Image 1 (cartoon, rainbow, N blue to C red):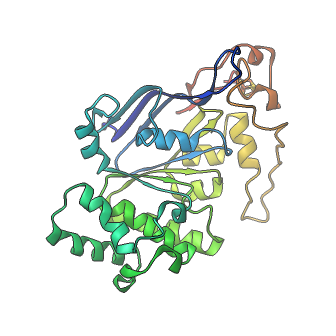
Image 2: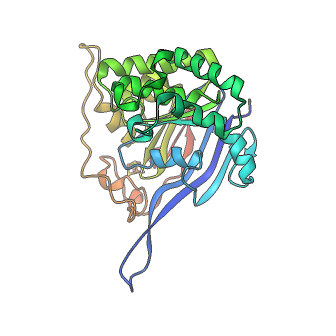
Image 3: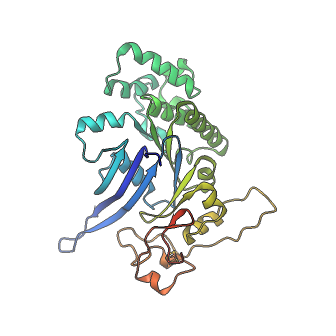
Length: 318
Ligand code: SF4
């Protein structure tokens, strides 16, 4: 078996919640004991409702947020234990594309300045910088004559291309894309998805693709992890998951996605209630208050993520 490019073991992120003077401190369990393996050249989709912890997981992997517990191994190096210098050199190989690039592009800087910033930080010599800048603009389908423009002068789709260009500047191996198309019009979404796929092929990139939209995840991923309240509840190849989801939560998510074939019928599973608060998650299986297949054991015993027919599922039904 090939060694994974990235391996995450037991990752946990708790956010403290401020309470009254004499009340016990509580925590939001944003990510709770997540294990993942990502192999070079693949796309791992992470899917779930908003608030399930998928974006926090992505940010923890890049250590933009410090994890509370767990290991993150990139090419065999545990980046949670390494020195600042080691983290700095690993960061070059792990970049992020954000949902709304407008929020992360400094409005006072020209695009050329924004894109060369990471090159300065990583000590790329001056003679290489301009060439890398112009090459990257071309790769993402932007014109180098636009380098002296400001972020507000671009459309949403162009700004996302700039976000992708910034992530590509240092020629990383892994890109974590957090809802990269959800703020865009549908026609622009497909352009950006196609661009990401072309870049993956051209540069052998590895992606972690975070989205609440199952159809987008189906389009781009090789394997998919379904998250619920900070935990992975199903982890499968794309075809396995989309042809026959096993976990009741995956089934409900999939039942809500539009079907392109008008002859195909799919029964919609309506989830009961809202996502419970991650600061006070239910006992036993965290999904039990909303699950149509809930049994007595589900209320008290949390199901482990175990191997079922070549995939992993956390459910007492299997
Ligand atoms: Fe539903 Fe029980 Fe499975 Fe949880 S463990 S998903 S409550 S059947």
